[in-house]
Amino acid sequence: MEKDIIATGASWKHEPFGATRPIPYRRAFTVAEFSRLRRGLVPEVTEDKWFIYFEEWRCFCIAAGPGWRSIASIWLKTGKAPW
Image (tube, rainbow, N blue to C red):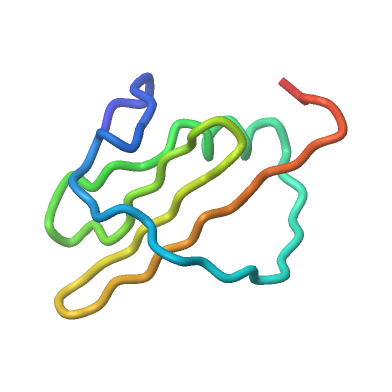
């Protein structure tokens, strides 16, 4: 994927998220890390397992392979926007 393209939910075929459950996790991101996360990741070849996209303050991470799928939806919080 070109670095100036930002992934969206429409960038790759996937099933909608179903019921979720919270996982206690906290992490601080640098401005550079957040910028990279914001761009997301769209699989380019079959061996690529991750599809990541960002909508508003939520990051969606989908990993899949033959016979398995793992999904995560992460809410990002900040006291003030670093960018």
